[in-house]
Length: 396
Image 1 (cartoon, rainbow, N blue to C red):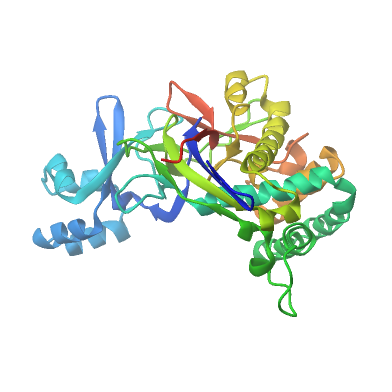
Image 2 (image 1 turned 30 degrees about the vertical axis):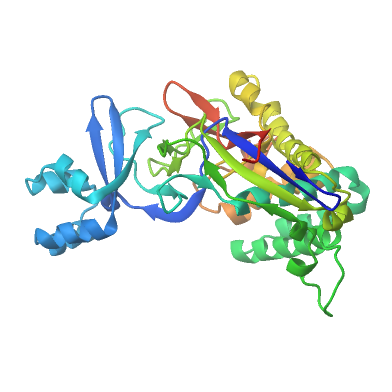
C-alpha cells in the first residue's frame, strides 16, 4: 500500500470463486476449431489462423474447405480432416496454438456449437481488463447512492417504467434507458467536477477520473481455460430452458485461479462522493454484489444451498453469463420488488425476447424477472457464474 494525503494506492489478489468469462468479442463457429475426443473428455483445439491457411494451401484444400463450410449443415473440422485421410493429432500440433477442455450440461452432445472466446494477453494468458473492474465499480457507486438516498432518486423509476411499458424496438428502448441513467443518475452522482464547457461532458466531469484500476494479470504459470455450456435453471419446477440444442458455449477462467491488480484513488477528486479510501470502495462493490445474490437466493437458495454459500463470499460479480441482476440497477430503483418484477417481465416479453417460443416472463416469472439462475458445471462441480473475492497484498 502507498498512501499520501491526496491519494491512495493498493494492490489486490483477485481469486475466482467460480469460473469467470470476460469475452473478447470473438465467436468461433465449428469450422474454426478442432474438437478432439479422448476417453471421457472432449477438448477444443484453437486454430492459429495463419498456420491454418498455410496448411490448407500446402495441401491444396482451400476450395474444398470453403465448400464444406458453406454447404454442409454440420461443419465440424474433425470429420472433414478424417475424410481427407489426415492424421488429426498431427494437424493439431501443426496448426493449433492452445486448447481447452469442454464440459456439457448433458452427456452425449456431439459438438459444442459456437464458442465465445475469453480475452487474453498477447502471451496467451487469460486476464481481467481494468475496464471490466472499473465498470463494476461504476455500477456499485450508483447503487450506493440509490440505497443511501432513495428519496432523492425516486423520480427516476417512473421514467424507466414508462420506457419499459411503452416498448418498441430493442435498440431504441436501450438508447432511451441509457439516456435516463446518464442524465438522472450518472450526472448528479458522478458528474461533480467543475464544468469547463457549456455542455456537460461526462468523461471530463466524472468522479471516475479519480479512480484508476490496472488490468488483473494471472498469477503463476497456468494459462489454462475451459469451455462451459450456457446453463440456466428455472424457478418454475420442471421447466427446461434448453435453447433447442443451440446453446452458447463460453471459454472461461477456471475457479481457483488468482490475479493481481492495483487500484489508485485521487482523494482530491473522490472526496466529491465522500470516498476517501479504497477499502470503502470495495465495501460498496460488496454491497452491490450481495444485493443481486440475495434477490436470487430468495428464489433459488433452498435448491442450491452450497452454491449460495460460495456466492456469499464474493466481493464482486464479473463478466458474461453472470445474470441480469448483477448488471442492473433497476431493482434498486423500483419502489418494491413486486413492481420491479412486473415491469421487467413486460419489458423482457415485449422488447428483449419477442419470439413466440421465448420464456413468457409475464406469465411464469412470479417473484423475480428473469426467473433463471446462471450456473456453470463441469459435471462433478457446479457454481454460480462470475464470482470473485479480493484480498489486499504487498505491492511488490
